Length: 321
Image (tube, rainbow, N blue to C red; front, side):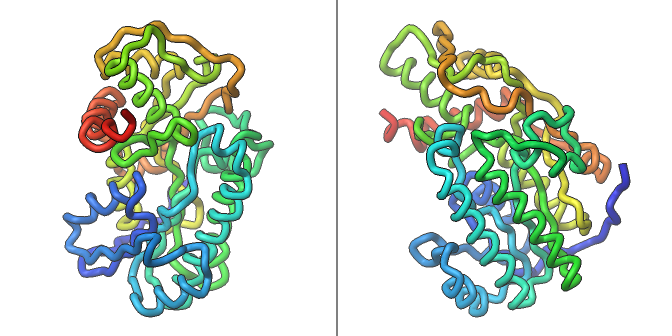
């Protein structure tokens, strides 16, 4: 595998705009950047609608950030992706387009676009390397989100090619952590199972319902580890090709459910709903390029789940109850 040339980009003293700072990834990145001697810039939805081009251009011209991280996106699990295709395609296309073009106009020195492992073909060889992009058919249940994220990657490459700009892309694997979405109608699998398991613990119930067959394999990365990887890439990477960010191993959904009930402290029967889609049979990233540059994750899946469940008890369980 060819290693992209390394560069040194000093974050100290830079004005860094984290778009999507209230989300799981954005909030983790804000926490991580707090120790980088930089100025963190944010804008909530009430102050800036990233889907409105004129508003984004005006705000960026006034703020003039040195660095932009595109962590803002419309996200959700299988059900949300499958039933709200316009939201996942249109919203994400306009958010990334507005931010990337506005960054060029105001002279942003470095931009990091955050993608998703769902960009890869449904039956891509495992573990999935960066060069698997655009080599096969996408998973139908999240194709709208995938197309938008692929477009963002290609935009960064285009701006690098045409304007010589230092725009890079990172592709994280499945994520979990603080400020995840625990709504059962739109959440990803870890948040959904944690919320369901907690409900059994507090309200009673004899079984934990798990969507699908339980056989698909998934890789999971703790959001604070991702934030550390993003800071590492901003400092040390300046290549055209996107970079995978994963942990290097995966588990079945059944194994995940068994681990979650142990973390929550219950022992229910697992019931699998075969009427719900499984999605891609396996999603494991080849993170060899990033590991070769010198970064590795620090948090095991069990430790990350325990931290996430503790956060959930303090911040979200009351509203769920």
